[in-house]
Each structure stands twice: as structure tokens, then as C-alpha cells.
Length: 80
Image 1 (cartoon, rainbow, N blue to C red):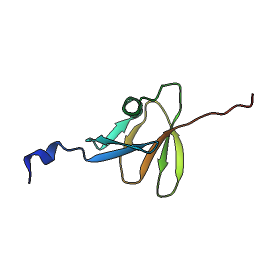
Image 2 (spheres, one colour):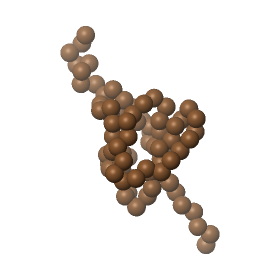
Image 3 (cartoon, rainbow, N blue to C red):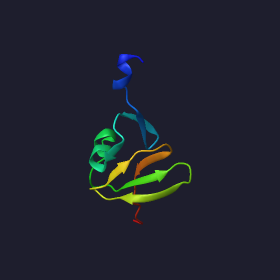
Image 4 (spheres, one colour):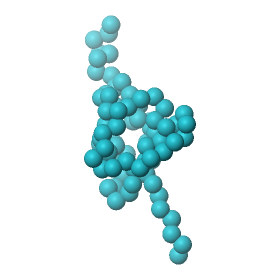
């Protein structure tokens, strides 16, 4: 085993199509926001990329990472 292998990120987090390296098995919503520079006034969604099922994340959510997950901000549209 290469000594540097223990310091490599174990996960890649897909946030709106951009992959971010992450070394822990979980991540919080504030950490997701910091990675992708997403403001706190926008909702965050967790999306299972295999099934395309999504749900809105609360600000205090802790997400256990697994393959096939993606994250996105929810954009609201209004009729003007």
C-alpha cells in the first residue's frame, strides 16, 4: 500500500454536474454549500442518480455518502 493512499479523497461529490473530492463518509448541508459556493437562501436537493428520486435537505441534515448520489440547488421560478 502506498503511504499517500490514506490521504486521498475517498468520495467524489457531484454538485450540479461538478465533482468535488471528499474524504469523509458523510457530509452536512453547510459543507455542501461551502464546497459549491451555494448561498443559504437556496434549497438543497439530494438526488439518487440511479433512480432519479430527489428530496429536499434540511439545513441540519447529515448525508451518508454512497455511489450514485448528486446534489443540486432548487431554483424557483415565478410568473412575472
